[in-house]
View (spheres, one colour):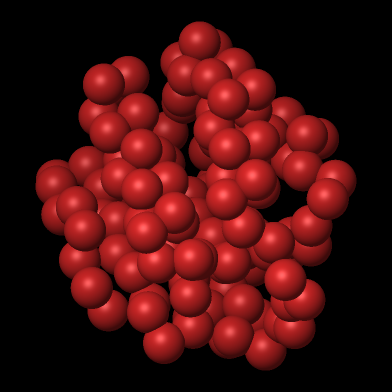
Length: 133
């Protein structure tokens, strides 16, 4: 794994072998921090032709409404246009985080997604899923 951003609130890393970007939320991220992590992931999608997105929401917390809208209306369409074809989400126990994920997924009809109890399960699913580019 290639670490792209390693902060107390998030780890963004790239699995170059399988073309997967991983975002592991470690705790609450302020708006600037949240956007920095997503932008870092997006840059890797473009630079490395990434097709898989893994978001570990286990320790994620609430995301500000304006950041939710930015993710849904700006970054997801950009990610899809850049090549993201499948997404794996590791579920959070936080109800606000769950609502955010459902909201974001409502705009992701053009590719496959799955929900998992662990990051290991999510990784295995992404590695097995076939994507035609």
